[in-house]
Image 1 (tube, rainbow, N blue to C red):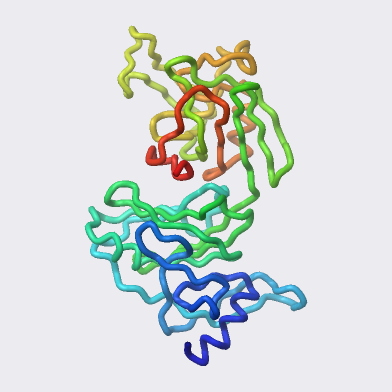
Image 2 (cartoon, one colour):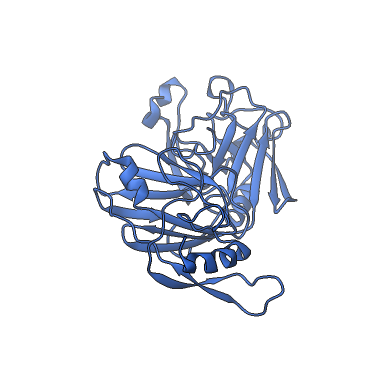
Length: 307
């Protein structure tokens, strides 16, 4: 360990930062970055860059520490995009998503080209969704108000998590309970998937949304003559890549809180759908429990938390 490392490591640990590549004695946490590995990812080179960190108890103002800047070998293909976007605030279930310009054959090299720093320190892991998308998430939901910096493709992306807004649908009660930082803020009557379309148990999270969403069951193989649908719903928030949304369903208000009548979506009243749309964001978790359906698939695209 260099003299400089010995000097900055205790300060980093005090500030709650994770810097990978330092020994356990030198860092708040020392965590590897390879396929299926746990911990924060990447390593830092010898250059320095000032990083503003949260105030340390007993100190005044903002603590600025010279932290080694990441110097990583490039992946075999370029990085097309990183999500969350720079300066975005997301929910506590949002994974880091890195899309490459083409198929990646050397996954270890691609992972080694990425660096992530968090404050406070969290542990997590890499995993892949297909051969063009690398993801990283904590082992547990992000702490509320975590600051995250991602270096990928030669660019820096900084984002943070907001309040811990967690929604849970209990199929025993047909109610959605929404909490913010552990406090219940809303309870909504709901109706989930019926019979063969039972909504899968597991952890989802909010994705793409729109005030009006066209839903056409023929896109997943169910024609209208066979009991399908082609309709536009209001205030739809996607929970899975295979078409599960929470949305306004005025036609099933009498069933909400009583029984399941949908093709898998979470039906709520127009008022509750508007509230959910306006008061939750991308990456906020939505959990389904006690349903008759099977477990939500890990690689649906928004099933990251189910393995």
